[in-house]
Image 1 (cartoon, helix red, strand yellow):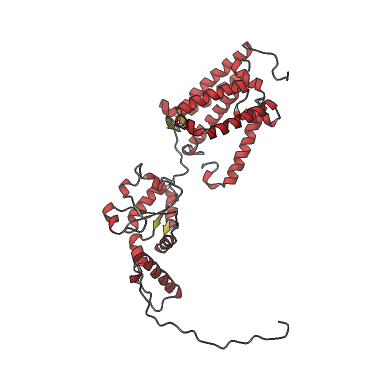
Image 2: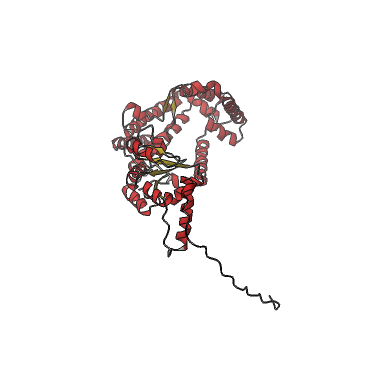
Length: 200
Length: 203
């Protein structure tokens, strides 16, 4: 079995079309999971709704299992799968900013687009803020350049850093995820709130 | 049983299987033996001396000549614009980027085909693109471009045209004093009476 789609043999246009279809699917899944509601997203932080945790860890587990088995069957070339590059300072600072923005704004960047698409005004404000932030960062890039590119480690993988096989890491994360799901369900019962899906 | 419990067990089982799988390494970029053999048979990786002369004369900006001989040999008779990377340092980390790139059209050459073919095959197996071979190596270059042979009188018109082109290229690369003028009397075209066009009628 060869690769499903040989990336170097399809045209850029077709590549974009595939990306567009995947993007549609992603947006549909987000909307369907109720992620366009910031009450649901903020619930993650207060413990009354852990859908965010469950959806994203389910996605991660599905993706990891899929990649592991497809790699074993020779259907995917893991050497050209993009691994996000790791800059230590950038990751920490960016993570903090993202977390604050998440709880203050009530959206993450992806879900804000989803919510904006169904016409939520707060999402439009959030999206506008993101774009202004991007513009400001771009314009003042020279100020941050040093800290932004500090401690570059390249596309490192957790399994390589820990010195274990990719498959074993998958198992560990599945165990962790299942434990988190149980804790999440428990928390949902403990911090239960009146029906949050209804508009106030 | 609760659906969540079943799902958890299934996912855990899949994870257990995944943990036991060996780390397979697939690379769609690397060629296998069969594909490499096929490419060798097609010989689409060859650039002839004439094509190279064309590229050099037109000053193709994407052309990069790479001499794979040793430094001493390469110093004696370099091609214009060539860089020298001996075979033993070719795949070292600080030289690798000359071959592993997608911008330039690399043409590898050595005295004959052999050494350059070795480099080309290793590069191709590593999945590097845009690498070509000078067909016949420097020997073909010298025989065909620098010192082209005047074709036999009975040779085809194409052979003469090729010779003229090569002689011009030789002049370009070696300087004007080496021009070899063909010693053939020009053929005077025979004048024929032109037929008159039929006039009138429906034409």
